[in-house]
Length: 223
Image 1 (cartoon, rainbow, N blue to C red):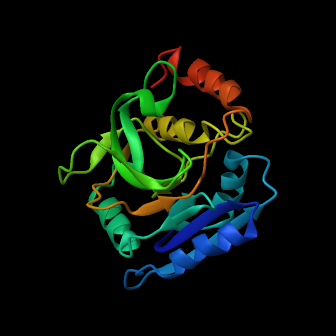
Image 2 (cartoon, rainbow, N blue to C red):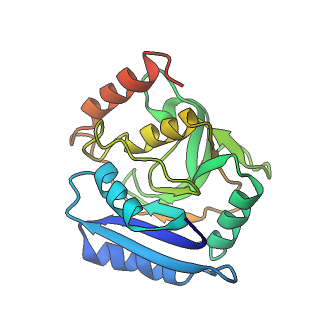
């Protein structure tokens, strides 16, 4: 893979939202010697499927999978991401918010010691979602939320298990851990992203995907 390339990958069903997200990506400071690639997948049947398509189209070492309604507001995002990955070869994936230990029901935000920060509108209004203290350390976690997931290694997304819009992210974290890599939430003095998702829809396959995740990764002591 090209170690001097970063690829941003979106699954897109709303052109206006995507263009706004892309505009924020275009405003980021690019590390010297690096170049940016973009892959946007339209008509994906699910996020795991779409992300697999984007992953296979790019030879970039660093890939950033983000929702079309995510705006990266930390201008030095790329500089900090590349630096963190280079200093920590054992880290396979970064996320903005996550949890150090998943609960047995698979719902990450109900788990032990959630960490990270993001401006988020899942309650119906935009507000700061902040977990944990402000200790200036990066935190090893068991799972990260899929609003933004950055990687320095490629692992197939489990579209065979998760065909829709839920638990593809927690699954991917488990797949990286199984491969021997760490998953991490970086220290953020202020949130690096805005996630304007609105009230979350848990009627479009959430419970089925949760059961699939628990059965695959938790009930059998999967690590």
